[in-house]
Image (tube, rainbow, N blue to C red; front, side, top):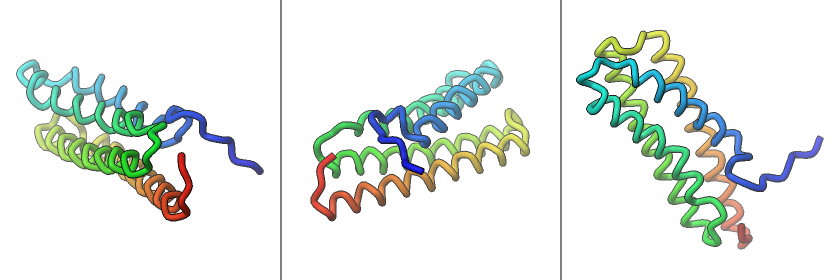
Length: 130
């Protein structure tokens, strides 16, 4: 079986998963109490957006280091999002079950991002260009 060639960041499984999570949790955050829409709600929506946006931003850059930096920023935003989800759960805006499910899905994406970074590092070490 041959792997399909990745022609765009949109072809990356991790990007698609993160985009799906973004839409789900963004909609969920709109159900937070009114006073939280511009506090926790806004913060979680910004961190959600930044994860996938950093992957897109680094795509097609001629310098692997810049793409690796984007993946590193995506990882940091992913951790921030996990924090916001924890707070939402503690404030009872999110059930414990939903929190655990989202946490596992984000952890999977984190592993995928690490794998992408490792692959890019191998390309860099081999002297290849994107």
